[in-house]
Amino acid sequence: ARPVYANKLELVLTLVGYAVGFGNIWRFPYLAYSFGGGAFLIPYFLSLAFLGLPLFVLELGLGQILRQGTLGVWQKLGLPRLRGVGAAATLCTFFVSLYYNVILAWTLYYLGSTLGSLFAGEGLPWGDLGDCPESVLVVREAVASSPFL
Image (cartoon, rainbow, N blue to C red; front, side, top):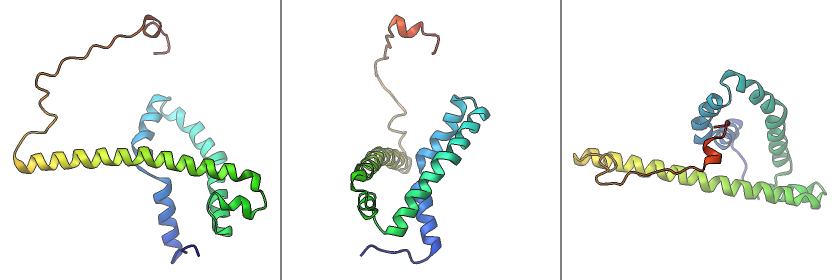
């Protein structure tokens, strides 16, 4: 049998932890600035209201009512041909977890390096580049003369 939540607060906290991550917090201000500031918020909230939230509620509702995961919910609904949708959702979740874990590993590594060097009384490991050669970036003429850059 699948585990059940003890109360509604536990469910809500799990959903917030699932939906909001470092990527949302770090990337949103950059996206808003890159795509027009406040003007970006209009299509963002429209797509959130008409696409994101209904699909999220649908996925959540089907999972809670049928007590199935993304693969089993289509079988229980009598639509076995749509199991590919569940497989695609599972695959997307897997790939997102890969890059998310890499970002968390970088964060923990640099936090540990910083704290370790501070407590040891040394400078930061990346503070002195030493005799690191200067990189030269060569860009093709077609890219450099593009009006979209």
